[in-house]
Image 1: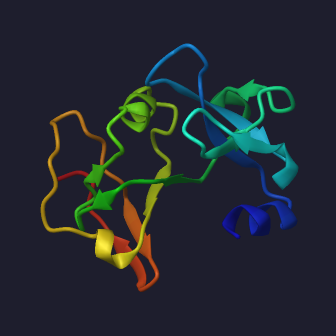
Image 2: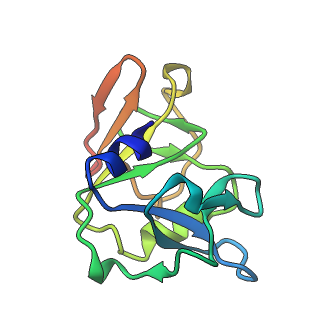
Amino acid sequence: LLIENALAEGKSVLLPRCIAGQKGCMEVAQCKDKTDLCPGPFGILEPNPDTCPAVTMQHFDPEIAIIPGVAFTCDGLRLGYGGGYYDRFLAGGQLEHRLLVGFCTSFQILELIPHNQWDIKVDAVCTENGLISCDPKN
């Protein structure tokens, strides 16, 4: 629904896609319609490489990046799915100075999760109960 609403409002929607042959790496492509999506290597819908070429963030100025996760803490730590895709992507600096928002259900908010010093925190976490503002600088 979030993607559909953004497209209906004429917003640019950029979505991640696993890079074929590069385990743990992903790129971003612009999605103009739901029909642009197809199952990727993990069965998750992502932009079809045949119709959605990869873009560089230099051509777009996203204000918000939605970051998925298995779990989050209230101070912005994120536990991923174990492949390091988002860790590598976020470390690349493409979304530096953008609002990073984790999306999850309230039961995925935990007090502690395993993390590393290089993990990049999200600025906020959105659940069905509302928005939790995090302090990612800590």
